[in-house]
Length: 258
Image (cartoon, rainbow, N blue to C red; front, side, top):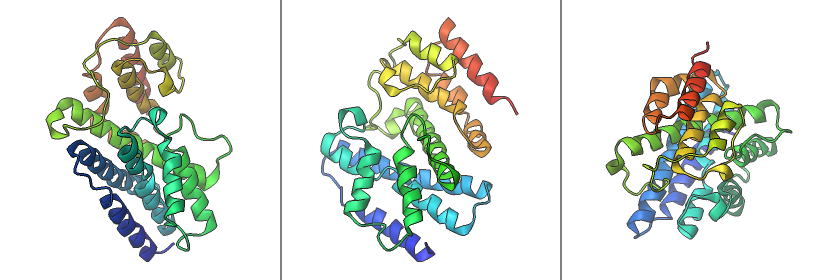
């Protein structure tokens, strides 16, 4: 892959996302948010990549994966008006279909690079990375998962703190609801990776997101999360009970470890 190839991918992404312009204000806003999210995730990929001292071609791969990881979201939201995969389609798989249909990667990347890109996109939204993934491919899967989480933290917490800045952001409704599920509490305290199918209330989702801090692979990603005070800022929107205080203490102790 060359710098010219990366520039082609940037231009294609710009044109592709622009093609989904909608007169519907809510649809247009959410597609714009998703485009901006993709660009920020790309930037996180590059930041983490520099910290790991990736070589030039690895940095190219990091940028392309970050840029394209959510490319399926545009067709998904335009068609279903939701970003919930269980109510529509798996957006990672849909994104791979888009890349194949549009022949975006054809003749621009090697088969090896294409495999890495596809595997990273396919695994970025899964509960755990496929067990048979290893080597550099695993590295890029871990990079995109950390980068994605970092921006979702930022986007969601900013919305909670000032919803007027992103009024149409497709987040859970009734997020002031203070109910939660005991199984979510127990799952986090037992160190499990919790499936979104277990979510029953908005607080359940907030607790799962808070537990993401335990699943960041790279020290630089955790440092970014700490510098932006994600733990304290998200915790402020979760009710304090005997159960949740156990979760807060558990997470805080782990992320404080050197």
